[in-house]
Image 1 (tube, rainbow, N blue to C red):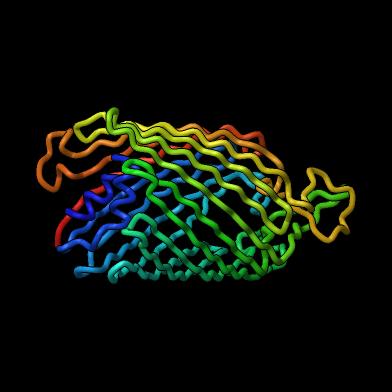
Image 2: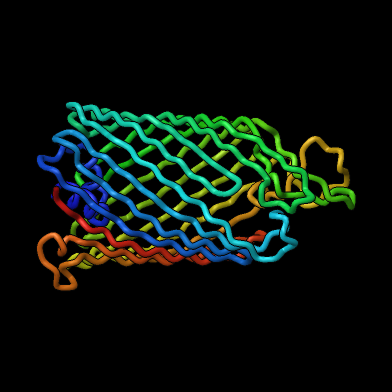
Length: 364
């Protein structure tokens, strides 16, 4: 029951979230199984992603998690060597982790592996947390190592085969402070270092009237700072969340992302939420919409490196099983539906995202 209550408290307010994060280990084996599906559609790309997540208590002081997902990506892209015709590619990912609580400390590790016909990725991470000042302050830290291998195996037979790799090191530190009975604030700093192939092995750039392969720097350092404030209003059972993220990297790309969210508990296991997110970024220093020379050191046709802004508007509905007449464990089931619309002024065009999930608790 402890895990179930922890997950449900996400829609009950930030105080419940903070208290759970600082709570003692559960007393008996309990778990949750979540079945999710995501649909993403923009101008030339469609992604369908089913996934399965599990969360399990291990003994009196441990929690394990596992997930598996499949991406089915359908896209029209000259970059894939198909002259703009539609193609479908699948990616399979699996991963898991374990966290153990020892007094005021938590330590854990995780691993993730994904594979597609021309790309494989492996990540390994460790993390820890400590609770201070009567458990009013939580300090977290994590470190991750990643190794990606890629090729242009999907290109036409006459195109020379290319293979390369990418290494990633990522570190993170965070603080979460209770500001009162119903308020909590958090601050997170992330830094990552990427070395290796960061251009798309399929993608080409039109420069001085010629088609040349995309070329990116082989090193990139990323910095991001994110702040979040959560306030639960007991009289109306409303949770207000405000956040801001600042990003900068060694390619001179800067981004600002504020976000606001309102979660309303309407009783009987039902909650409704709305969210608005604004994202604005400038371009990487070497990115140009049009290149007049093919001999430049770096060339890119990656829209994610261009200057653009976007508006994300989302609404979500969450229901528990008891609303539908179930009792016991089935009454603690949770269903969620999320709809997002992304308005962005780049060549990707606007996008629609639909997300559905069913979470079922169980004991073992």
